[in-house]
Image (cartoon, rainbow, N blue to C red; front, side, top):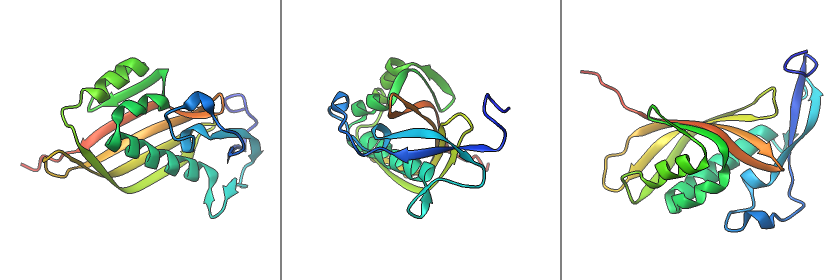
Length: 175
Protein backbone atom coordinates (compact mmCIF):
# COMPACT_ATOMS: atom_id res chain seq x y z
CA UNK A 1 0.00 0.00 0.00
CA UNK A 2 1.22 3.49 -0.86
CA UNK A 3 -0.60 6.36 0.84
CA UNK A 4 -3.59 4.08 1.33
CA UNK A 5 -3.77 2.94 -2.31
CA UNK A 6 -2.59 -0.33 -3.85
CA UNK A 7 0.90 -0.08 -5.33
CA UNK A 8 0.95 0.52 -9.08
CA UNK A 9 -2.30 2.48 -9.44
CA UNK A 10 -2.76 5.88 -11.05
CA UNK A 11 -5.59 8.28 -10.55
CA UNK A 12 -7.91 9.00 -13.40
CA UNK A 13 -9.03 12.57 -14.01
CA UNK A 14 -11.81 13.70 -16.29
CA UNK A 15 -13.47 16.99 -17.10
CA UNK A 16 -17.09 17.30 -16.06
CA UNK A 17 -18.90 19.60 -18.46
CA UNK A 18 -22.38 18.33 -17.71
CA UNK A 19 -23.60 20.85 -15.15
CA UNK A 20 -23.46 24.58 -14.57
CA UNK A 21 -21.93 25.88 -11.34
CA UNK A 22 -24.19 28.67 -10.01
CA UNK A 23 -22.01 28.82 -6.88
CA UNK A 24 -19.17 30.10 -9.09
CA UNK A 25 -20.93 33.26 -10.26
CA UNK A 26 -18.46 35.79 -11.57
CA UNK A 27 -15.97 33.12 -12.50
CA UNK A 28 -15.48 31.31 -15.77
CA UNK A 29 -17.14 27.93 -15.03
CA UNK A 30 -14.36 26.12 -16.92
CA UNK A 31 -10.97 24.66 -15.99
CA UNK A 32 -10.62 24.91 -12.21
CA UNK A 33 -14.36 24.71 -11.58
CA UNK A 34 -15.35 22.05 -14.10
CA UNK A 35 -13.22 18.98 -13.39
CA UNK A 36 -13.06 16.21 -10.84
CA UNK A 37 -11.09 13.01 -10.20
CA UNK A 38 -13.06 9.87 -10.97
CA UNK A 39 -11.16 7.02 -9.38
CA UNK A 40 -8.22 4.70 -9.91
CA UNK A 41 -6.75 3.09 -12.99
CA UNK A 42 -4.02 0.50 -13.54
CA UNK A 43 -0.47 1.87 -13.87
CA UNK A 44 0.64 2.28 -17.45
CA UNK A 45 -2.84 3.21 -18.65
CA UNK A 46 -2.72 6.99 -18.62
CA UNK A 47 -6.16 8.61 -18.82
CA UNK A 48 -6.44 10.67 -21.98
CA UNK A 49 -8.92 12.99 -23.56
CA UNK A 50 -7.66 13.69 -27.07
CA UNK A 51 -3.89 13.73 -27.50
CA UNK A 52 -2.88 14.83 -23.99
CA UNK A 53 -3.34 13.14 -20.61
CA UNK A 54 -6.27 14.68 -18.77
CA UNK A 55 -4.08 16.11 -15.97
CA UNK A 56 -2.14 18.08 -18.62
CA UNK A 57 -5.39 19.44 -20.03
CA UNK A 58 -6.67 20.43 -16.59
CA UNK A 59 -3.31 21.93 -15.59
CA UNK A 60 -2.95 23.81 -18.87
CA UNK A 61 -6.50 25.17 -18.64
CA UNK A 62 -5.86 26.21 -15.06
CA UNK A 63 -2.65 28.09 -15.93
CA UNK A 64 -4.34 29.86 -18.85
CA UNK A 65 -7.27 30.82 -16.60
CA UNK A 66 -5.04 31.93 -13.70
CA UNK A 67 -2.94 34.35 -15.76
CA UNK A 68 -5.96 35.67 -17.63
CA UNK A 69 -7.53 36.57 -14.27
CA UNK A 70 -4.22 37.88 -12.91
CA UNK A 71 -3.74 40.18 -15.91
CA UNK A 72 -7.35 41.40 -16.15
CA UNK A 73 -8.68 41.49 -12.56
CA UNK A 74 -6.57 40.01 -9.74
CA UNK A 75 -9.51 40.25 -7.32
CA UNK A 76 -11.14 37.36 -9.23
CA UNK A 77 -8.29 35.03 -8.20
CA UNK A 78 -10.02 34.51 -4.85
CA UNK A 79 -12.27 31.96 -6.57
CA UNK A 80 -9.39 29.51 -6.98
CA UNK A 81 -8.06 29.59 -3.40
CA UNK A 82 -9.51 28.13 -0.20
CA UNK A 83 -8.97 29.01 3.45
CA UNK A 84 -6.36 26.26 3.77
CA UNK A 85 -4.35 27.41 0.72
CA UNK A 86 -0.70 28.44 1.07
CA UNK A 87 1.34 30.71 -1.19
CA UNK A 88 5.04 31.49 -1.13
CA UNK A 89 5.71 34.69 -3.08
CA UNK A 90 9.39 35.53 -3.46
CA UNK A 91 10.17 33.78 -0.17
CA UNK A 92 7.28 35.32 1.81
CA UNK A 93 4.71 32.86 3.18
CA UNK A 94 0.97 33.53 3.08
CA UNK A 95 -1.60 31.13 4.47
CA UNK A 96 -5.32 31.31 3.85
CA UNK A 97 -7.42 32.79 1.09
CA UNK A 98 -7.65 36.23 2.76
CA UNK A 99 -3.88 36.57 3.27
CA UNK A 100 -3.16 35.40 -0.28
CA UNK A 101 -5.67 37.81 -1.78
CA UNK A 102 -4.31 40.66 0.34
CA UNK A 103 -0.82 39.96 -1.01
CA UNK A 104 -1.92 39.67 -4.64
CA UNK A 105 -4.05 42.83 -4.36
CA UNK A 106 -1.20 44.80 -2.81
CA UNK A 107 1.38 44.09 -5.52
CA UNK A 108 2.90 47.43 -6.57
CA UNK A 109 1.88 47.38 -10.23
CA UNK A 110 -1.38 48.19 -11.95
CA UNK A 111 -1.11 46.57 -15.36
CA UNK A 112 0.38 43.15 -16.12
CA UNK A 113 0.71 40.88 -19.09
CA UNK A 114 2.06 37.35 -18.70
CA UNK A 115 3.58 35.41 -21.57
CA UNK A 116 3.75 31.71 -20.68
CA UNK A 117 6.67 30.08 -22.51
CA UNK A 118 6.41 26.57 -21.08
CA UNK A 119 4.45 24.51 -18.61
CA UNK A 120 4.59 21.04 -17.12
CA UNK A 121 1.96 19.01 -15.28
CA UNK A 122 2.00 15.79 -13.25
CA UNK A 123 -0.66 13.72 -11.49
CA UNK A 124 0.07 13.05 -7.82
CA UNK A 125 -0.69 9.83 -5.92
CA UNK A 126 -3.37 11.64 -3.89
CA UNK A 127 -5.52 12.77 -6.87
CA UNK A 128 -3.97 16.22 -7.18
CA UNK A 129 -2.18 17.87 -10.11
CA UNK A 130 1.21 19.55 -9.83
CA UNK A 131 1.54 22.32 -12.43
CA UNK A 132 4.54 24.53 -13.22
CA UNK A 133 4.40 27.60 -15.41
CA UNK A 134 7.45 29.44 -16.77
CA UNK A 135 7.29 32.71 -18.62
CA UNK A 136 7.79 36.43 -18.77
CA UNK A 137 5.64 38.99 -16.94
CA UNK A 138 5.40 42.57 -18.12
CA UNK A 139 4.35 44.89 -15.30
CA UNK A 140 3.56 48.57 -15.96
CA UNK A 141 6.66 50.08 -17.58
CA UNK A 142 9.14 47.75 -15.85
CA UNK A 143 11.53 45.65 -17.94
CA UNK A 144 10.41 42.15 -18.89
CA UNK A 145 11.75 39.49 -16.52
CA UNK A 146 11.44 35.72 -16.27
CA UNK A 147 9.43 33.85 -13.66
CA UNK A 148 8.44 30.38 -12.49
CA UNK A 149 5.25 29.50 -10.65
CA UNK A 150 4.16 26.17 -9.24
CA UNK A 151 0.57 25.22 -8.37
CA UNK A 152 -0.76 22.21 -6.51
CA UNK A 153 -4.33 21.71 -7.71
CA UNK A 154 -6.90 19.68 -5.83
CA UNK A 155 -10.50 18.85 -6.63
CA UNK A 156 -12.75 19.80 -3.72
CA UNK A 157 -16.51 19.45 -4.17
CA UNK A 158 -16.02 19.00 -7.93
CA UNK A 159 -14.03 22.26 -8.22
CA UNK A 160 -10.30 22.48 -8.93
CA UNK A 161 -8.64 24.83 -6.45
CA UNK A 162 -5.06 25.83 -5.74
CA UNK A 163 -4.04 24.48 -2.34
CA UNK A 164 -0.35 25.43 -2.62
CA UNK A 165 1.68 27.74 -4.82
CA UNK A 166 5.20 29.11 -5.14
CA UNK A 167 6.21 32.14 -7.23
CA UNK A 168 9.75 33.31 -8.05
CA UNK A 169 11.15 35.83 -10.45
CA UNK A 170 14.11 34.48 -12.42
CA UNK A 171 16.70 37.00 -11.30
CA UNK A 172 20.36 36.21 -11.84
CA UNK A 173 23.30 37.94 -10.24
CA UNK A 174 26.26 37.24 -12.51
CA UNK A 175 28.46 39.93 -10.90
